[in-house]
Picture 1 (tube, rainbow over the protein chains, first blue to last red):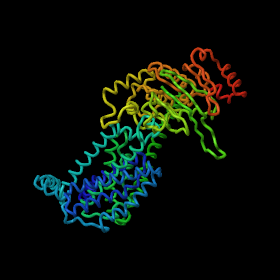
Picture 2: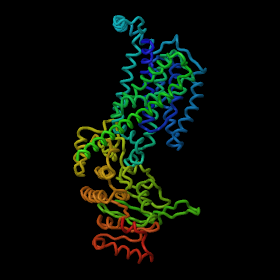
Picture 3: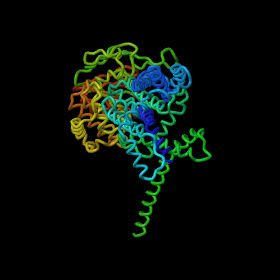
Picture 4: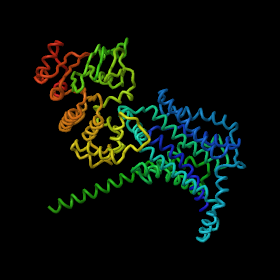
Amino acid sequence: MFISIFGAMESGVIYAIMALGVYLSFRVLDFPDLTVDGSFVTGGAVAAICIINGVPAVIATLLALLAGFIAGAITGVLNTKGKINSLLSGILMMIALYSINLRIMGRPNLPLLNESTVFKQLELFWESTGIDAALNGMLTGLGLERTPGTWSVLIVMIIVTITIKLITDYYLKTEVGLALRATGDNTKMIRSLSANTDNLTIAGLAISNGLVALSGALVAQNGGFADVNMGIGMIVIGLASVIIGEALFGTKTIAITTLAVIGGAIVYRIVVTLALRVDFLESGDMKLITALLVIVALIAPKVILARKESVRKRKKRALMSTKTEGV
Amino acid sequence: MLNLRDISITFNEDTPDEKKALQDVELTLDKGDFVTIIGSNGAGKSTLMNVISGSLNPDIGFVEIDGNKVTHLPEYKRSNFIGRVFQDPMSGTAPSMTIEENLAMAFARNKKRTLRAGVTKKRKELFREFLETLHIGLEDRLNARVGLLSGGERQALSLLMATFTEPNILLLDEHTAALDPSRAELITKLTGGVVDKFHLTTLMVTHNMQQALDLGNRLIMMDKGQIIFDVSGEEKLGLTIEKLLHEFQRIRGEQLGNDRAILG
């Protein structure tokens, strides 16, 4: 139980980077960008092929980010310069990327088990620190029998993801960032305030898909393979993270919302993991579970709010009637 | 300051829906001019505004602002020179962003946007001072999301956002038409004050004749895509609604527009 939740948190933190990317396009730019399904794989593919060909893993990961950046920029150009509807330009890019990803990889699946990925390099360094032994010792002290193999992925990925979150928070508050948010909020207005909304949309989608591809590169290295189908339904998982996070943790400020998105990504992984432990559910049911989760996350807050409102009104009415009775 | 030469624009040319929206319009505004534009629906007032702001390109003719030829500059580049308030109070502000963030975006209108923080302590002070001049208490709500404000408050904020960076040209497109009478009166008063304060060269479209008479030093009447009447200075001060209606009838030989044009 503990091990599977631990694993869920690990991948949740890695997928959270993808969720932050989806947050940028879906919420900030108000652009339902389906490129994600393709650019996630592009990230994994670029990282895998680079590593296999001897490029240092960190550089390979950064190249993956760059590839996603370019893919997002192209979607942006299709939408703004080609005047293609936002949904359609994302779909076109997604389908084009499927072939491009196959070309990058050369075949549908690239194993990375014997390659030097960022996580393996990290583990080598990590062993010398002795943190694992200390943490696992504590867990054994608490009475756990099976302890995680390494804490390095979880701890380092939390640091990386939080760093990306903080940079995103800052960026969205700069002069350019404000204009980017306004592009999603009121295009007419920000254009009348001398912002080039076309370029902002392109830049926003580029950054968004850069993060998605980075996440894909890390997922491939953590999982030990890149697969041309690893991106199917990724946009829905991203949306699920954003929507669950917002429902659970709120959207009061930008900083809270981005934290909520990360939280949402982790909660999503944990829920799916727990659901799959139920006997009659199979791994093929995961997409259905995802869809149901999103539906619940979308409807539940409204139901709760409506319930609260009706309680408030009933109280008010009750108060009124006791007053009039008193007269 | 603003120079329009020979502007013509036709929509749906060579189709049964052809409409000559502007025909050979010539207009020159001196620095500090406050011009009010009236005319019935379809007279070309909004088209004229859109040609100046750059959301429409004229078929022929050119637009010059402060000596710069801007006819073919896209809207976002031209807004370096232009402050604009729209008719719909929802159009001029970003609802999910705070008051201070909206002001910060307006503050960057005639500057290059950088990767430095949009809202700084110093700017906050500046924004607060400007908001105080509106006298509607917004200075205490810098962190409130603009979507929570009423239509009148949002329009007052839009007016401030369009003006406090002192644009070369201020365009007001029926900016009080969507408000109730008391709010409209407040915005009208604020408009007069702010234009005076910054000596802004202003073009205001209105359906309300009384407003057109009360504000500004020059009045233009448009009909069927042409400027048919243009008064300024002393002569404008002596105008009344009756005289305006009479003028229109004299020039066009027909009654002016509808009740809305007269009563606002």
